Length: 114
Length: 109
Image (cartoon, rainbow over all chains, first blue to last red; front, side, top):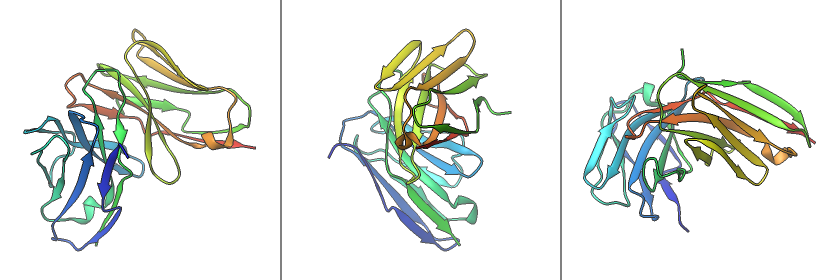
């Protein structure tokens, strides 16, 4: 099925551990992005990519790394997890910025850092 | 102060009512998005518009660029419309994405 696939759906980490949240899309979308959603604060952009080999920072990039080696995949890495990174993470993709075509969101990853 | 403000924060309606959710923004954006988030947490993009009006089924989205205001209308509301509706503005470079905190809609049968 076409869409954005995020894994895992749930994850519990200990402070200091590292992990990678996976995001893959099969729609040949150029634009991909990561967001975190926290109660009372809404969604915030972490990192984004406008194509393979190109990434850039969003509003809250600290503590996260990304890479875009292929059009399909856009993993988000937590290098040393902190309790402040407890959140729900969403990946989204779009055919292109400003094309008038909306975004497709993944189903989310609920991360808890203890 | 948020760059994107939504009103109301919470809304309860009877099935069949016409619903309006408002969004005002204070920054320059190239596109305005309306998203729907169901209780299960998944997010669906409803509309992305930069001018005028778009319609999809019972949903209508409008934007007034001069007034920096957008509205989402739901006609003949149904309990399955119960969700959080999020307004967001994006820049034309993709590096800025401003989200409202959402409007929680409950439609009662």
